[in-house]
Image (cartoon, rainbow, N blue to C red):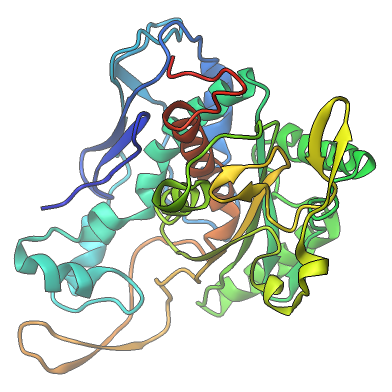
Length: 380
């Protein structure tokens, strides 16, 4: 059996394979009557599409065909929304050599160990990052619904190898810091959809040079994405197994290549004293707010009203053009493999909207499933 569904109240299922006729998603629990800006959704999807020399040369239009749940004008009717995307630029023949020889770093062997020869793994099959396209349809819709409630989400590339971007202003939660954070997030959200997701233009230039070099060397590299949400009211979430961190992490790990996530000051808290790590409180405009934000906007699995923020690490793209050691699953003999096909040098740049999408879906589901009674949220 296989399931690719996330959510408690807002449920998202993704379907299809990398080289199948189509891929898509179904979303349940969306509010009836909400009007989706379809042009803005298309612009959001363009951020995930390949557009640089180091991206995959595979081009897909990725214009969603809405099968149900939404009118031609973009108004949600409350029923399950299903969207499909055709795969028009497929080349399954590129993967003939990997049918019996698993690619290092990919899910090929793990899938074979679970399902045997019955699993269709062409181009990664259902494990492929191609499935992030319908994920971004669902996430793009969730982002619009959250934005209408005053919640803004933005992400950027924090680090690729030795190149680092300017961090978002997140540890300090003073009024001045909040203004700077709002400016930084607006910079990212207002950028051209094909622009590199950096705050520092020099970081983008250095990354361009690095990825161009790695493509010539037939190699790949990973990196770190930093993501934040502002406007989340205090009091949403649930302790223990349905905590905000749990829900966000579960969703973010649905993005292929994500291998680690940390909230707030993350692993650095191990080096802090309690007097340094604790976020003190003050009253600001009639509301209680933390003055710092080492907790990442979450305590006890519940939002504190400070920005929610995390960083996630993505591994290098597994498909490299260099010879690698593997085995033949039929003969059980060693075999050398050179991966064919069309692949990115780096997943991090195109994964930024994917991380924003999963974050948005996790927040929207939490908002509807574990609302703050104090703030009047409800499942409608």
